[in-house]
Amino acid sequence: MQQRIRTFIGIPLPGLEGLVEWQDELKQKLNGEKVKWNEKHLWHLTLKFIGDLEPQKVQSLCFALGNEFSGSSQGQLIVKGAGIFGQIRNPKVVWAGIEDSSWLQNIWHQTQAGVIASLDMERDGKPFRPHLTIGRVKYLKNTKALFDEVKAVKENRWGIVQVRYVVLYKSRLTTNGPIYSEIERFPLGYGV
Image (cartoon, rainbow, N blue to C red; front, side, top):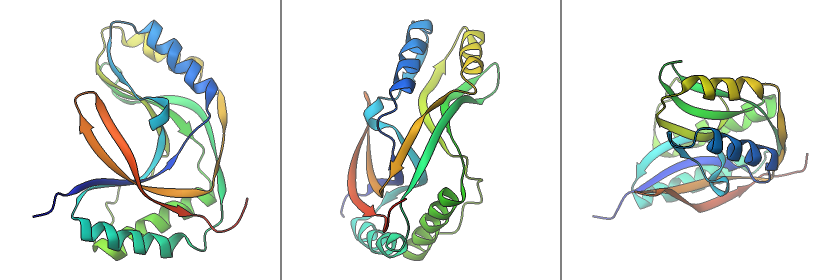
């Protein structure tokens, strides 16, 4: 039996230096707290988490996604603000926001269509909440400090990312955190 491949579809988010600086400030202010910070070279927008797939399913997914995205336009993502998923007493995820747009909704719908067509999966019904995960909170004594920091940058604009392709990623979980590698890039047809 061949080893299954843990997969997701996403858009890489490079070059957000202001956000890197804010993450560094958060690390200092929350020093000693149990937060797993995502490394900037791993930053991405997840369009669809798929999970474990057999290698032949990965091939059919690549084919379907290639068809879906071949006529799509390139676009841009505006990264701004910040927030927290979870309760005020029990925050789980620190994130930067990604402004929703008709272009992004179209790419998201094409991703869903490609996955459904190739893997015979049903839509999961979850709303699409575009965000970039900055860190995952394991345990936090001082939740007020985190919420104050997030509130202070609520309106910050971190940058604009030009999107020229979508990626099917392989994710390998390790004790030091996930390792992502590209399985295939799907170029988007024409410019912004």
